[in-house]
Image 1 (tube, rainbow, N blue to C red):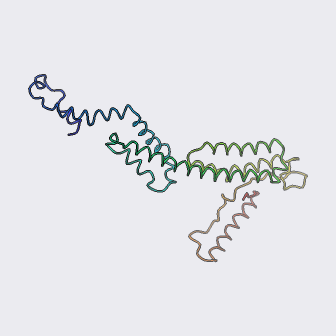
Image 2: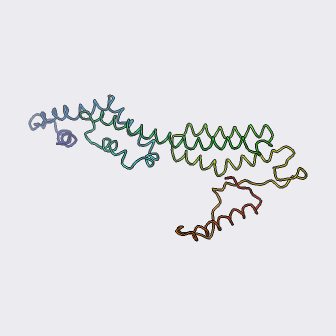
Image 3: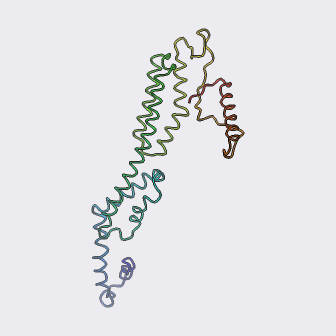
Length: 250
C-alpha cells in the first residue's frame, strides 16, 4: 500500500477511533522501516548529493549533450526518474554513470575549444606576418594582438560548445577583418597600403569571404556545368565586393 494512502487512512480520526478501530500499526511500522526511513536517510546523506550533481550536470550541459552520441545521457536520466532511486546501490550506479557522462562532455568541449583556439592562434600569426601589421603604428599593433588574446582567453573559460563555435565564427566573420582595418587605418602617413604616399585613398572595409555568397544559384551541384555556374556566380559576387571599395579576407 502506498505510504501516503496509508497515512490518509489514519489521520484526522476521532479520538475513540484510535482506541477501537485502529488496526494499521504493523503496516505503518513496515512503511516507516521500508520507505520513510530510507527516504530520510537518502535526503540527509551523500546519496542526495550524488542525485543533485547528476541533475545539475544535465541542466548545465543541456546544450552540449546535442554534440554527443544520441542516448549517451539515457542511463543518468533513467536513474534520476526512478521512484526507487533511494534504495540499494542505485546512487552508486548513478555516480558511475554521471562520471562517465561528465568525462564525455569534458572531452567534446575540450576538442571544440582546441579547434577554435588553434584557428584563432593561426590568425594571430598571420596578422603578425602581414603587411598590414608591419606598416601599422606600434599602439595599433599592440591593441590588435591584445584583442586576439582576449578572444582566446574567453574561449579558454567557455564551457558551452555552441558559444565556443559562435565565438570562432564571429572572429572569422567580423573580428579578424576589423583588426585588419584597424591596422590599415594606423599606417604611418595614413596610407592603407593602396595609395602612392600622396593623398590617402578612402579607407577600405575588409569583409570575410565567409560572408560573401553566390546569388542566383540554388539547388545541388551534380555536373561540371553546375560547378561552373556556381563559380561564375561566386566570382561575380567577389568582384562586386571589390568594386564596392572593399577588400576580402580569406
